[in-house]
Image 1 (tube, one colour):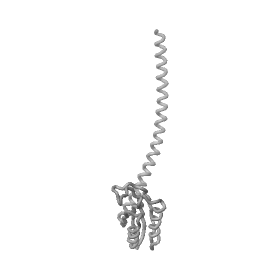
Image 2: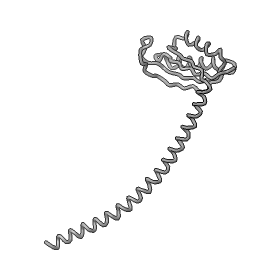
Image 3: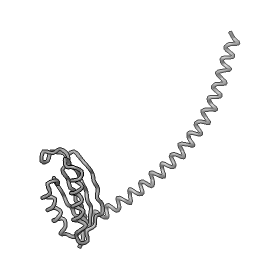
Image 4: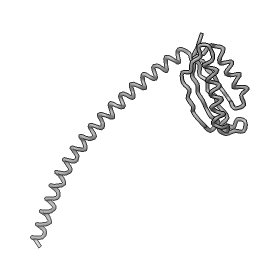
Amino acid sequence: MTRRYETLAMLDATQSDEKIDQIIGKMEEMIKGSEGGEILTLDRWGKKRLAYEIEKKQFGYYVLIEYMAPASLPGELERYCRYEAGVMRQLTLVISDRVLKLKEKEQKIKAAMEARRREAAENRDEEFVEDMLEAREGDDGEAEVEEKESVKAEAKAETEE
């Protein structure tokens, strides 16, 4: 029976990019090589500062892998990470059905909110353009009236002198 897992690995950031890619590639091979193993997402978070030093290192390279695999694979993956010198820490979690349902709801809510934002932005743009046009028409008319009045006042002042 396959289950859904999530593994967060913290690799030594002082390694070369090729070595980091090699470690990640080996983890991918182990997941895909297992019976029913399938990678759902592979998210490279990149180099991040650690909250405290680990093995006298201040930075780590984080990789999050979400996958479907049989129950025996997480143990094998943990064993590989323990003996691989480039892996500083790793954590594997089983993703329960309740969490999956919550993730689906969250995605639906995010999609609905994004649609509302787009709609509101479109409406605001239309209203903004209309407001600008109205303001411009109003400003031009007021400016002309004020200009005419100031010219008349100047002319009146000159005639009085």
